[in-house]
Length: 139
Image 1: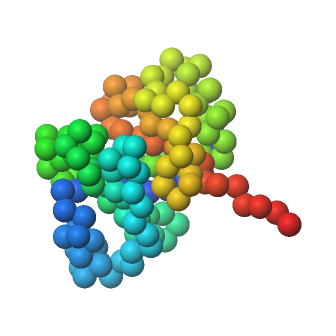
Image 2: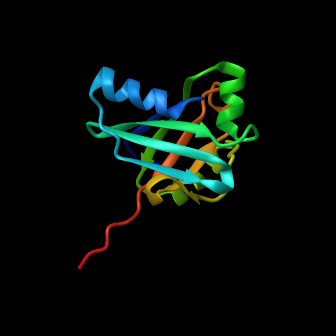
């Protein structure tokens, strides 16, 4: 599996507006976009930072994974996202190593990336996301 970079670090939040203000006012970060994933009842906000980003994740209902996380642990680091060159081969490689996956096949995530999460029981209780950015059209 070829990992290109840490794509983003995600923080689960209870108040997107408050944490957006913290990142903007305290650190001078600029909000790139906010995106809702209604099937997962989740809202994300992305703040680019060099070759990576900070992602805020807020559940839009109590059953959302991030909302449960915040209820159990408070606002805190939620996951680390690694950009991979080829998510399909990365998932095949992980399955070959006996690693449990939350997503057996990639789903569409932030910024139209193809994403999949690894079961944290296989990674020392740390949630990792793999992301393959959309392919650029060549003309």
